[in-house]
Each structure stands twice: as structure tokens, then as C-alpha cells.
Image (cartoon, rainbow, N blue to C red; front, side, top):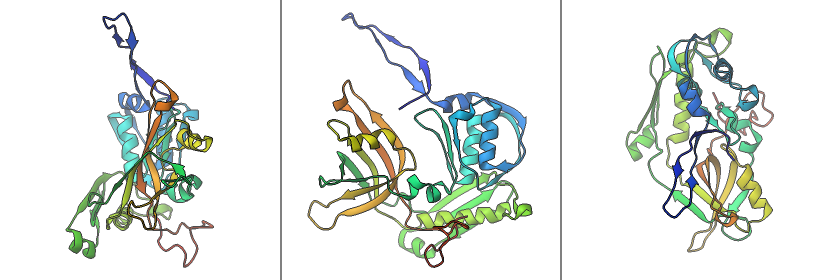
Length: 311
């Protein structure tokens, strides 16, 4: 469930004669933040740039799960730059994810990961409240304006701000601006790719398409291990960030079940002194209702079936 580093061994000696030690642990992010680099980096695609950073600090190759990158990252001169900052800058520029998973491996998922990886494309399990599906003990829904962005502004470092907006959404919900700047996008036009400004414009259009309308969201799901069937324990122990699941909720007043496919965004285990106290909570996000063309894909470049080009 967790591989990382112990920060301290704090003793606790109550007057009743017992002795307790509560270990405070962190994952590899703390190590990455402590390591500062002074070096010159060549431009590389984001996955290669992640691997370069990990190699520079001696992070084992066996403790990496790094996707091939889609964005060409600029070369830079780093001066006292924490490795963690550089890793997060790369992921932010790619519109991907970087995190440490339970076994201690550093994971980088590019922006196509959830569009192409089987565990993200196909639901891995269905959870519901009827006794037919896998059971949950708590489901938190949300329907609000916190994730509406209808004026998106993206700027590559040294480039010109690129914007994408939707007037219909702005009329309905007011102007809501999402800004991303200083992105370390290199010029890939010499190899048939995009200029930094072109990629920034594509990123703005992509983000606008995802966030311009409100949506009912299931934000978290909690399941309990006590007396759970083996099929539920398989989910408790094996699901990870970006896995797709299906969640059903039947309205208390009757009517058709609300069904939503979701991505897992975080995993939290609360484990008591016995197995009855094991509760697992996943933070969730809805999978996008949009589908995209991905060139040369047997399933995601089908004419009249998928309708948008994923940048």
C-alpha cells in the first residue's frame, strides 16, 4: 500500500506505563524537493525529460512508470532548482500527471494516457446501491460552478497569450477565466510538430471544451472492507489514479438510476486495529463526455465516430 521514507520516530510514554511510536512517513516527493540541480538541460519530449531528471538524481529505473510525452520541453539552465519543481513544471506543460504511487514508483501520465490506456478507457468495476453491484458506504455528489471555465488563456514561456472562449457559456454563467502561463513548450515545428504558440492555442481549446459547461459530479466514493467479497477486496487493493470505474446512484424518490463513469484521482486508506475498520476513499472526477481522434489508433481515429483531434 505504501513505500516511502520515515521522517521521525517520536516516542510517546503515557503515565499508564505504555509506550507508543507513531511513524510519520513521506513519499519520494520530499526527496525530489530536497534535491536541487545546477545543470544545463537539452530540449526533450516530456517523458524523456522526466527520465532525465530522475537519472540525474539516481532514482532507480525500476521505480519509474513514465509515459512517452506529447509536448517538446524547452532546454533550460537550472540554478538551485528543486527536482520536484521541474517535474511538476513538465507535467503542467504537458497537461499530464506526475505522482508517486503506492509501491513507491514515480508515475508520469501524459495527456493521452486516459484516452488510450485500457484501465482508463474501459470501466474496471461497477459500484452501486442496489445490492447487485459492488457496494459502497458513502457517495458524495456535487453540482456547482466550481469547475466552469469559459475563458481559457494559455501562454508558453516567451510566447504570446493564446485564448479560447465560449460566449454561450459566459452569458449563462458569467465570464470565468482559467490562466496557465510560463509553460516550458519548445518549438517542435522543425520536426513536423507545433510552434509554442500553436500548442498553447490547442491546449486552450482543449481545456475550454472540457470545462465550459457544469456537470453533475460524483466527487468521492467510500467502500468498506469488513466482510467484503473477494471481488471488492480486489478493487480496494488494486485500483489506482486514472483508473475508470462506473458509479450508480438510485434517487431516494425513485426513478432511473444515475450512472456516471469516473476517473480515480486519489486513493486514501483508513485502517484501524482490525479488518472491520478498513475504509477506502477514492476522490473522483467525471470522465469527459467528449471523444477525440488520435491518429493511427484503431479505435480513436474512426471517421464519424470520434469527432475531435486530441492535441
